[in-house]
Image (cartoon, rainbow over all chains, first blue to last red; front, side, top):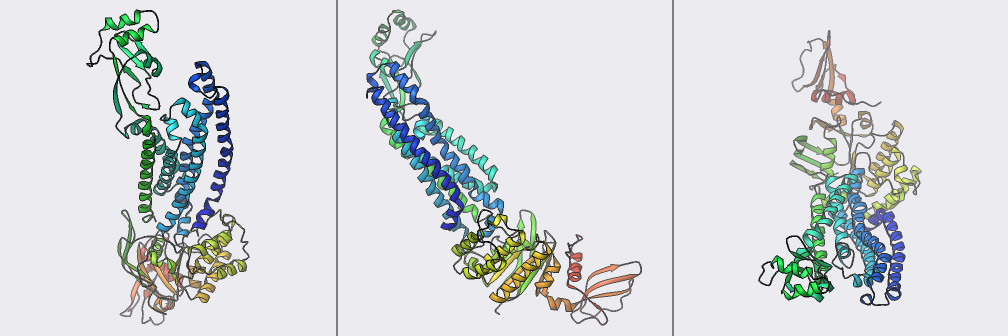
Length: 332
Length: 287
């Protein structure tokens, strides 16, 4: 059965290895260029250079890294579509299941070997790609401090393995249930796309209950951690993009409030904004004792989140495989 | 030989509300080539599917080689499904290797000899073989598994007359060499007549008649007489089918004791009489 599985998967394995070989050159090349750029353009210290230099660096590598991230997100989907969905559906479509099921091995054995070997191949390919990108992008991730970003989180370390194994088993089970390759591919893509969108926005933020913290608004830290703050017509002051280093901020904008939770008087706030210079405004607001409340997942939870998400996707994959094993005994 | 290779008692299979087989009682003897004949949709594939274990019955019981079809039976039963499925992308040699890898008792020498005798190129992809060659390859793989019972679902339906004849003589060679029992379905009675020594006629999800071909031929006669006037029939005679023309009537009668002066019936007419009784749908007859 191992031989047959290999014989049937030979072409796709060779295509995967060829693609991997190309990327095994491209990704380290990107990594080396990034390190070179970090050393030369930024002088080895991202916080030491001015904004314009950093922006040039971002512009130079941002698109390439975005493409690499998207590639790592696409690989699991491709595996689900082109390895998973046809694995059983093609056999059912061409009737060859009736040939292989009348040999001396059980269907369960047949499915276990096919599923097992191709899961290993999936793990090997995705693991290699994730390892390459994680290494290549590590200086970038360090500078940007955005490891929890929807794209970055799902394309580094162990999470891509979970996505790929899930996509593969999802494809297999869908193919077994639908019995036709092309519709099975379409359904696999649809389900996987929904999951890939739903997880970073609806599931991942809640894997651990976020820390909610009230932070005193002081001029210096506000200028350092926030993108800016603004006053609207109602006299509300909103801090935008307040980000603790390495943390995953779940609060996009936070309103400045008094320590007792009430809103500061409109006149007081407006007075602060009327004092010409940019430094004086924050200092004036600080004197009012204003605070902002943010909720976030701290940076040290990164690996907890990686392992939790991997475990979650592997559980989904196991459930999907369970359905396949149950179903394959009943297919005629 | 020992007991029956296949026994069915009250066997039935439904697909949702559609009844594919019902009330099947059968004893298929060992060491024979058994023909399973009936129109399309009669339940032939379902019966073979049940025998191979690919399908599970919804009522009654089936015993194959003394046990219920299941994983333990897999090495003992060879099954060639309808349209002789093969992996189009795999070569002839790959198929033999598949057989060798997936079957503990696979006889590679036998299969290789068969392929060589047929003049098949081992490097040829199965997808590029002719229908006759595909059937022969499927037969070689199934026979080299060394099963005790070989099941074929319409193996010759898609073949031209010459390929059909070649396939059936290959089948008979295997049976003679390996001593395997065979159940073969077809809607082409002429083919079955050539190779079978036991016959099951299936129509409308039920067995219409089953028995040794020689016995069946001996027991069935056609009686022709003036319209409505047949005289007395023997007490054990059963009228299978009666046709009334304007002046003459003709009846097919099952009379184990024989009817003096009656005309013997060919196998095809016999089968058609039973199918005619069972259904209005005409049976395809190949020449």
